[in-house]
View 1 (cartoon, helix red, strand yellow):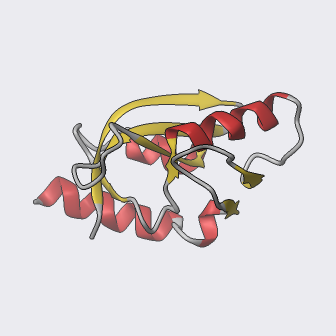
View 2 (view 1 turned 120 degrees about the horizontal axis):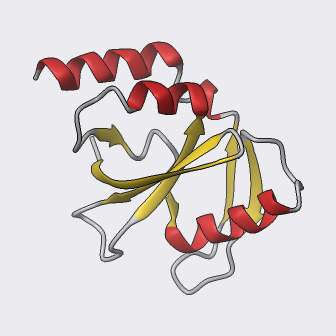
Length: 118
């Protein structure tokens, strides 16, 4: 599992964007987005809480900046993301479609309970 410590969370529209620290990367932080419903559950976990970053389709900090630019002009729906991050760190097309399909409420609840009980 490729976990990261959550450093901060910002809520934009109905999407929460979390900045996380991943010890195995040279980058200081990466980010992911999740629905408000999942974010509300995440807040119930006593910090620092952990998430499986790879399963959440981790985006780099530079990539999320591009995502936020698109969100400001309403080019995309809250849980949809299509863009190409033309940066030195990332030269791929990221696709984050309906995050609930990859990280469901049920799996979020199970991870939360596991973290709280460990």
